Image (tube, rainbow, N blue to C red; front, side):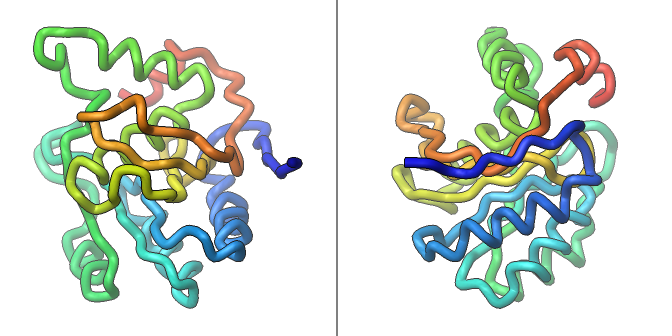
Length: 194
């Protein structure tokens, strides 16, 4: 079997439209009904809602958890309400790979850094699919498309089999639709993200 993977020269928001277009193209197979999407400020969620409006697909938008970087959340409450009115979900859950010393362990940080070896969006795709499954918004074993990025916008998309954090070994990556080549180091990326 052959498939298409798009590699972007650099990660970042400039790849958002191309990423969403690739996802739209993949949806033509009609075997996926849910998209799990990271969106910090709501810009990517707004664009996705417009682009996928005529598709038979439900968006599960995962913004940053409250108290992540600032006192208030950057995701607009009015957009969260608009998404919900349109039949989509918005989940402000705990970001698994970003809790300091999670239960006294650095395992989450180590897993996050290993996934960042592929690219930042790869790590976020894993994280948001786990979060959506833990919240009951996707079922374990359900095939979904995950969309995430590096900083703002999106540049990474994976077709995944969802799993909860109770059963992390059941999470699978079926397809890589796109990702940046990730020319920066993990340390440099972490500096940019803080």
